[in-house]
Length: 127
Image 1 (tube, helix red, strand yellow):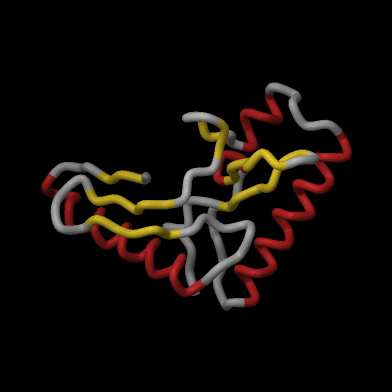
Image 2: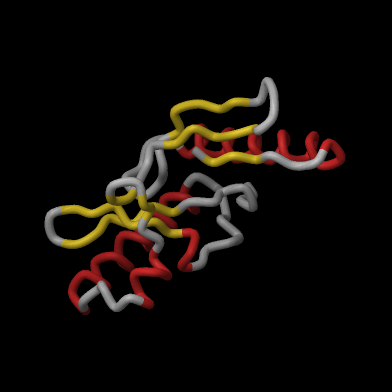
């Protein structure tokens, strides 16, 4: 769950950001490299997106942490980056630009032979 809980001065802006990101996820539709939107909470603070969890146990697996910990071998690294490119190509094919793609905006979902990357943080995405 991604939560936004800010001062009342920023409350309206935060609500709009949550709605914007939810609208983008809805517009993009289903893709293996994007999080699945389960719902949004905007009736009261904290505003939040309810997304499918990607990680291991209760811990999300961010790409930048896995690189620092040297947990990706050459083979899985190549496959991971090919999957990131596929997801980014899908985003572009729908007429969107991510505008904030970096290693801490990619989560890794453990799978049989490595990881499946998920591009997250779509609040800066433009059409």
